[in-house]
Length: 179
Image (cartoon, rainbow, N blue to C red; front, side, top):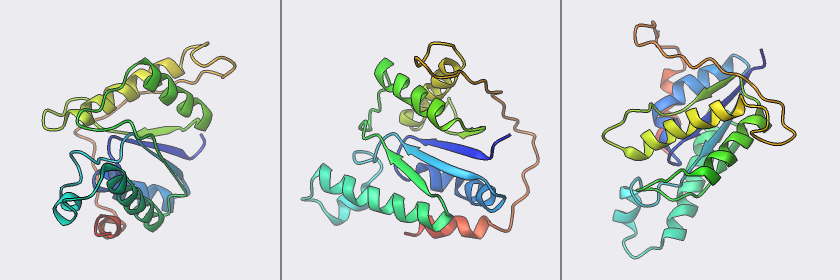
């Protein structure tokens, strides 16, 4: 098994607040991480930015969010982070976006994909992201989903009863969050 992990995040900072400790631990264990942020979170995830910069623009907010996410990624040892700029609140993932996500999965060929849960009544952008990832993963297993690409299979699994000890890297999770 290759040690490549893909993290698909609805907004620029979701991945570090929800999975930063896991990502850091896996990197310490020799994994390579690639983060894909579907949006910058400029509409609904940037309250502090808009409070401090009420006369700013969406473009300026995106630049700030990108810099914050890149600094957070560097602090965890993530070497690759990409932003799709699909727009948030609402995030809409249609055929074009899901095909693009499928291609990114097939190009990177991760053995693990981390993303949002598919049932999030509080933040529908997270739910849309989780469902889009499942659609893209299913398509990635089909010959012809991306012409010329070799399909790949995934086992989708999650257990609420799985023990999850808090690793020594837990404190490192707070570094990118505080940036």
